Length: 195
Image (cartoon, rainbow, N blue to C red):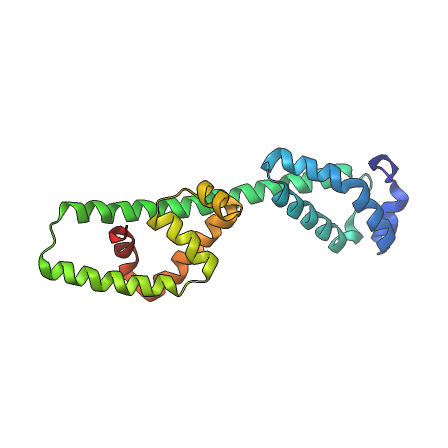
């Protein structure tokens, strides 16, 4: 069954909760909607998730569906893609803020010359930070260390660890969110002094 076979009768059956009619709609449109999403995101996995979400929403709102349904489905996928892109930009913006704050700490450190006592204090701070970082979940810790300690980009980490860039960004944000309460003001200090 193809897209052109989806008629008003099938939509009316979906309105009444007919699962078979819904499966016909799904089979007819899934590949097409997936290709629409890929045009915006260039990521098959995320595109598939967005299309699945659209179909879940269609099922939940089945009583409100109208024929023709084609433009509604396409617009829903487009909106899902735009929402995903906005979310990624927001996350990237938050990470950029953390990096800028870290760079400020590094610059201040470079300008100062630590005394022997300060050196001992820094070692204690470093140990405290290491203990906190080691408490992170494995994947979160690996992404965090690769990014902040080894200076790798989200793209490099995604490739090395076989993750999507969005997963890397989320793991970085989760790491910072988990470390912040435990280390409070020491978080960025630790990152600045660690190689």
